[in-house]
Length: 134
Length: 225
Image (cartoon, chains in turn brown, yellow):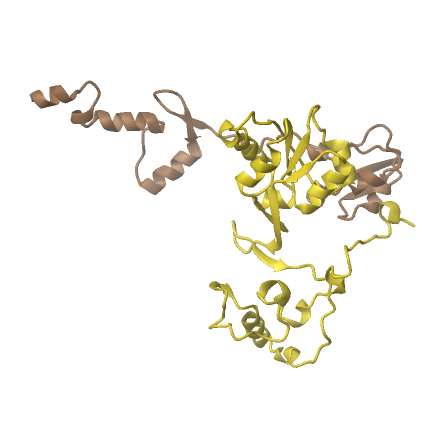
């Protein structure tokens, strides 16, 4: 993803390179080609390049509003009842190691229901009157 | 970095209730990092201000935006669209951003949502401490890198006052005495002799006492050549 972009008006004058306070712009002349280079980690997004460009070639909006970059994609564990996304497989492994046990993949709501169903006095289908009859 | 605090909600409501459509505008730099005026805070503030319970009449309609820096007039004019019908901007920037917006969009009212508070640093996540007053005549070279202007409650220049107690300032036990810190750091550096030197009275004119400060840097914009 290139955040620093120029339009077709760029004529390679290097005003932006010379005026970048953060030394985030550079160029490379090789054979018969000039390449303008940008280093996002140095860039302060100060906009001086955009201000000084005599050609109005710098499309600074790409440094203000950009796209999202995918960083990492991991396998996902979902609630086995309702399918709600819970956590990644890698997170589950870390969790299992920390707890020294594996937990069923349940969302908070279904974990609560499962816990309640194991306790017959408050389990589903029990009413106060039925409990009193016992 | 510039640290700001959100104003009390009642004060903000009082300032915007007369308008029909307000642009709530976050600033993407200092106040984003110190969690007081970024895009997320602008969204949250807009949501809260939309609640009808804050108003006796009809609440204004709110739009939300955010731009990397509000303190550069050409940038906000070029890249921050003002929605049609906006009759006021509620800015979550520092005072520099609010005033830049007000100049850029004169006569559109620009209302501050933050109190710009101090120039600070973050020694640990979630904490910011005032470090600098921008006095224009830095003394850190002979105070062990600890600013007596910003970090001494009295901005003293010649050592601690009588309120310094066991390294704490008299304003509160949680506030370290700047001069105690200066002394012990210079002692660790074997540079206590720096405190023995007689120095001229501090000139406060570079600190703003001579009017608003401006700088022109040769090589940029109108300052070139």
